[in-house]
Length: 91
Image (cartoon, rainbow, N blue to C red):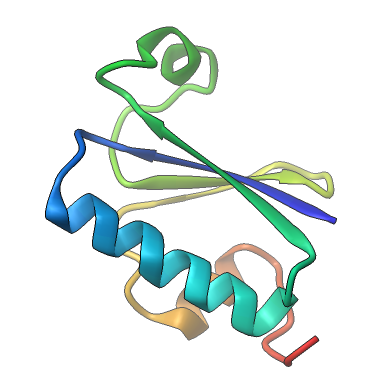
């Protein structure tokens, strides 16, 4: 099981689209073998500080270890999959 944490700023149309796109990309690679926690740094600043979040969007692969972070625009599925250490094959 993979666990991810996504940090965004605010509840905007762009943030909602980012979440939907990310879920679609993760599902295409991992099927239902992942959990995605979405946190708004405006309302979860303590957790963002604990995770050393200094820019958004940031996605963290929490499990399996090691922890990996991807910061910035991750519109390319291939780049995201590689950065998160995933194999781009359907489950």
